[in-house]
Length: 97
Image (tube, rainbow, N blue to C red; front, side):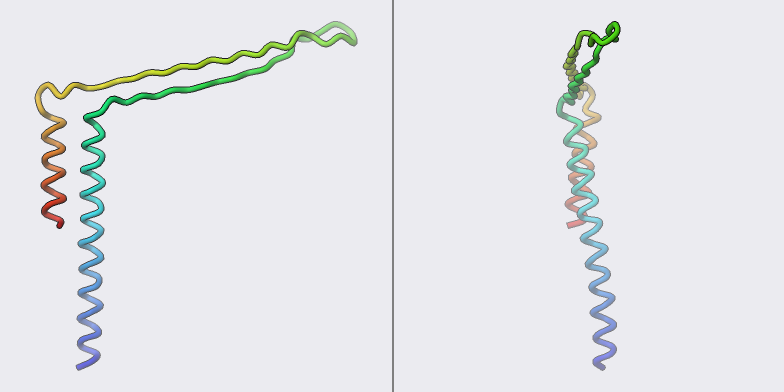
């Protein structure tokens, strides 16, 4: 009887772990679909230092160079495709719960 209960608990625990994993995956997909509604901003910064070759025994000039760039993009949800994806992801989370 005890061995039978232990086996049942192991199976129930595994089922619970699988259900929690599905819930976490559904919540992750919901977060990703919500993120698609917001603008994407990227940026980079670069810095270089160089020294020009000089004549015998004389050091050349030292040059520092820096650059900064940024960009942003956003996709307007004109036909509701992104909103529909969010709704579907939300429904999957609710079903997993």
